[in-house]
Length: 226
Image (cartoon, rainbow, N blue to C red; front, side, top):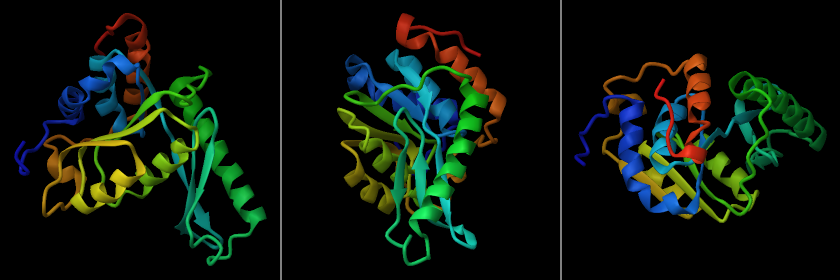
């Protein structure tokens, strides 16, 4: 695939990624999408691999008095995980502050999770092949936190799949997973949106509809196309 290739939209990117992930179909993988943009990509992968699709919600923890500065992240799942940056203590984050900030972000995760998927039980990644999917990676901070947090849940195999990524970021993230599948690593990179013809914002309604449609994939190998 040419470095100058541009995906029509996220759904096309997902179909192209799925062909590179077919070797994992027999492992009954769990596909976890980073919402919202990762969901249309992951939907096509789950459909092609007859796999379970769910969400992996990551929320940044802000530094005391400087919420824009990230000191870590909390990662959703059957066993929520906290990933702290080395700078957390230097930025004045005490244990009490970290716990309060984590609880606040978990409440927001709960709110978003219920909005997107209702009360369905969360999938357990322990012992499974897990494929984390996003629509592209620039700096990789959120994805890195997701990989580290999910690793703590002890999956059997951890795979990162994205249509496009900055080359140096992909090289760094390769050390955080067992397999990295990326279709494009253009130089210069510019931005994720530059590699899509249609990069319209994924809506909450689209996320809800795609998750509902994907419920049948792992059981019947087919699903309705919304």
